[in-house]
Length: 244
Image (cartoon, rainbow, N blue to C red):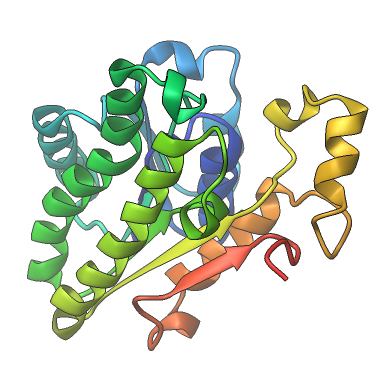
């Protein structure tokens, strides 16, 4: 059985991706930063109901040593690591003029350095296998920038450069690396917007609606599948036509 590792997967987009990959037949290694993220949370039960193995691994993916140990633990439990989804991310929004160094550093650490940490440790496994799929979560903010998100936009733009470099370095080893760049996705965060804010955003989207976490998971499913075997170094925007 093939195994997929998804960071930041206790809830939200990460959980939706984990569930979809379970439906595709992957055993699942969930990750999040604390046990508290899994409290009052049925994601593990939902995944196991698909007839696959599912285990959780607690680690701060911005920490090099913790990610190294986590990959050892996952390898010991599952033997192979076939898919890595670098999904973990945070926001600490604010205009550049008012942004603290702490808020800049924390977003870069969780969103960007985690991709280095996880990919470095996982590719050591994948290179021996001579196969693997790496899928990174970027954002339209990384493609076009976004006022009030200097740190977030920087981290997500960096992920695009990292994705293309990984693809070039590891393509000859049978490893692909691609990124997805979601736009406005319906989450508890967007639910907090005022009606006026929601309407303003919808006017920018050709399809005049928010995306769903399941729609993100569907594209990740394709990139993890055999159907994408000749796709690497690409960034797929999932935004309902936001950029047009």
